[in-house]
Length: 238
Image (cartoon, rainbow, N blue to C red; front, side, top):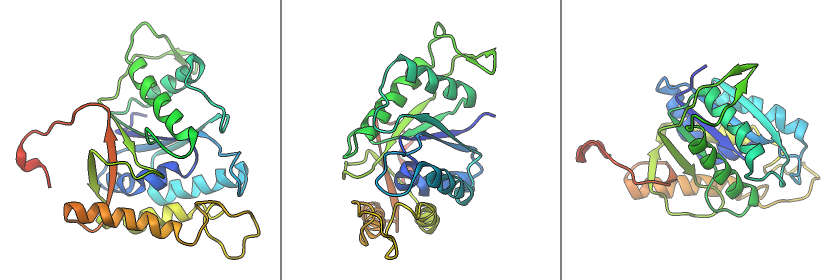
């Protein structure tokens, strides 16, 4: 299946927190979108890998994405090396996305920056004809996405562009809250974490509101880029 957009996240819920509004909007616009989680989040303080598998599947339904897969890399310990790059290259060549979204280039969790670099490097390598890969016993053709964009996570990085998600903020929130093991639950007896506080979801909404305010819309999500953006004409900007 060819996808228009392939979204990578180091952990289940990364894609939702950083880009769920954009994902939902692109799906509504008829684009085929998929999500690939690099790990099962097994080192997370709250919940378990099995619980997060179910939560990721629930979020998949909320967002309406075409596919969701998990690479089952080691949470906390995967690295940007040839072995992991080849696994990502197989996924890029399998789905042949035009656009890839991936983790923040700099963030609080070490897996986010590692995941960002791993996916970005793999997107480049995937376009090299002399790197040979197979999927289900068949040779794959080279494929390089046209664009790689990085969503913003814990740190308030300055975005290079934002996407208006005003009509999709509630869908984004619903997809995030599918991960009920990770966020605030007054009945939970599990240890508190930075994202399980009462104010964390409010901060996600506030960031979207603030980015929206800066461009004259209700809510927006921000992205950074590795190469200069171009527009066809001045009036293509909102």
